[in-house]
Image (cartoon, rainbow, N blue to C red):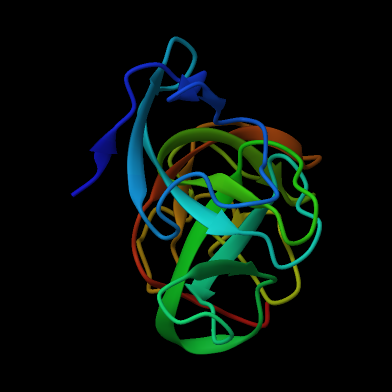
Length: 173
């Protein structure tokens, strides 16, 4: 169950969009965030494995160095549905703690390909931008579907997606 965040700007006077060098919340906890732009969504508090880019998406895995803690990871090929996907709310320094959106609408990177509203999108190995499951018109949910596209485009860049909060595969392509 997610803990509520009443004000998107801070919890106990700590700005949730500003990464912290030391953990300020329970690492791995999912919090509800509501703001006037994206509405209600859920974000997990994690440790950054490397420098994270705002709007880029990563997989979230248990931290083998610190049991009970969760850390981001660059997507690698996985045929098993074991990856939770989250999108960075802001740029993050390697080793810092931050929130990643794991469910709800967020502005995220989209690959340079054709996509339309309703397309299911996935993360592929070594990429941090979403790409359609097959081609534009990918409206069938598969085990790789991490989000649904809410934007029409052909050139990539940044657009709105609905993160689905489900364990997914991260295919090679």
